[in-house]
Image (cartoon, rainbow, N blue to C red; front, top):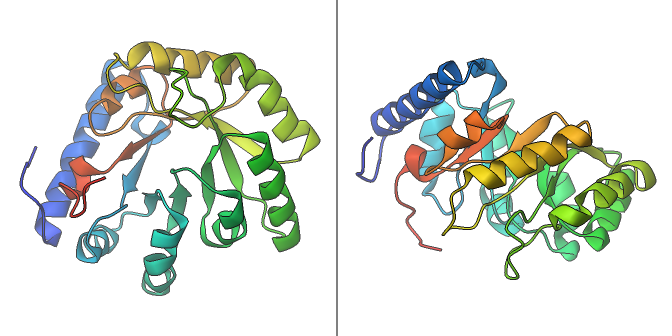
Amino acid sequence: MSSSMPQNDTDISQNLSEVRERMTASCDKWDRKPTEVDLIAVSKKQPLERVEAALRLGHKQFGENRVQEAAGKWPTLRQQFADVELHLIGPLQTNKAKDAVALFDVIQTVDRLKLARVLAKEMQAADRHLPVYIQVNTGEEAQKAGVSPAEADAFIRECRDELGLKVVGLMCIPPAAEQPAPHFALLAKIAARNNLDHLSMGMSADFETAIQFGATSVRVGTAVFGTRAVPE
């Protein structure tokens, strides 16, 4: 895989092809269909020309971490490129929920009851009932967002049955210092017992393992776009 910082369509095209080839190989290895796994290109903090290159190449699914950053570029990009599906994959503050509902197509980071209630209210007001994922803190890390595995079932039920949110799946970010496989397996187990079909898990370093454990979307940034211009 290219380790250089891609600057043009050719670089982005090569990286997208390499990631898709690796996804297909992993699907083949684990007896899954490549069409079962979506590639969410994580465009946060990437130069606009790299994002535009991916769009020109026909890529449609993108992930952003922050409402404000996404609002600064995607309304204009949507005017040029049709059928984009934009996922919010970062933490969401309740005071940004209205903007998120207007801007995004999928919200992957519903992680607490207060946010779920505000999202339900804003979606009702906008008549825009977006699919949402529940974020599960599989590593139970104090500094990380997400409901604990022990609380996940009750939280899913409340979001779905009491608040009327369109809960379609679960997402997680395993602890950086741990093997991701047990976390992916745990997320899949929680999803199965709650009849949820979608699993957003796996990033540039571990998306092949995520596919092994049932990921239906992987969130890949660096492997597609190269090193971010502005580090986290």
